[in-house]
Each structure stands twice: as C-alpha cells, then as structure tokens.
Image (cartoon, rainbow, N blue to C red; front, top):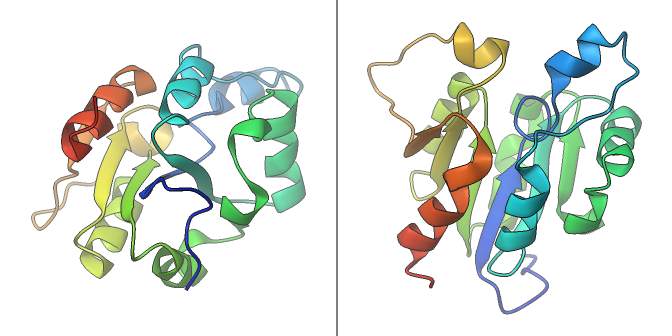
Length: 167
C-alpha cells in the first residue's frame, strides 16, 4: 500500500485529453498547438493546496507527458501519481487500489469509464467533464449517474471542498 506523500488524504486523478488539454485545438492546429483550457492552471493551483493531484489517462506516456510539460502544468503532478497507460481499462483497478485508503476523486470526459470505476469502487467520487467528442456522443446508463457533471473545471474546487468539508 502506498500512502500519499503528505498529510493530504484527498487524491484527485485527472484525465488529460478534453479534461485538462484542449485536444480539439491541438487537432485543428495539425498537432502543433499545445494549449490547456483557460481555467486549468488556476484550478490546479487551488486544488494543490487541499489535495494530491495525479493523472489517470490513456495514451503514449512520452506524448502525454510532452503535453503536460509544454503547457507548464507538469509541476502540479508528482511522478509517482502519474498513471498514463495505453488503455485505462487494462490496469485501472490496480491503480485505484493504490489509493483505496484515501478519498478519491476522478475527473474524466468518458462517462463509460467513470461508470466502470464507480462500479468497481463505489466510494470514489466521479466528476464528468462534459466537453469533447466522448461527452457529446455519450451513451446513457440506467445504472449510473456521475456524482457531479461540469462543463469546465471552474467549479471543481467548490465541489471537492463541499464534499470534503474543507474551507
């Protein structure tokens, strides 16, 4: 069992694409423009005061890390809390088990992924970011509703603080 690296018992795991990183802009720029959404740095800076921030994302690790570095947000995430894998579904249970003794918040644009992890670990808190193609073309689930749904990260700080009773 690995504990978080501070007295903070709140772990927030972010997906990268369409959650932090403006992937649509990147695609339209012929893979040249590395931009995060306008609210991302302020939100990460605020959340960093109350929680340990991590990444749970899919893709090529070198490519995804390049996005974080070029956007200058890599400093918010400790290497030991960055989990970038080719397919999240392949090892997500092992990753979640690392943090099982902490309060876990998962921030992602894929409703199907949030559903699957909530079924595995009902105590975690799911935050669905409703932007990007996965959010727009979502399938609905009769057995799942995310704990929170947002159109951008602006209100995530209030959601987490309220849920945890943190001022």
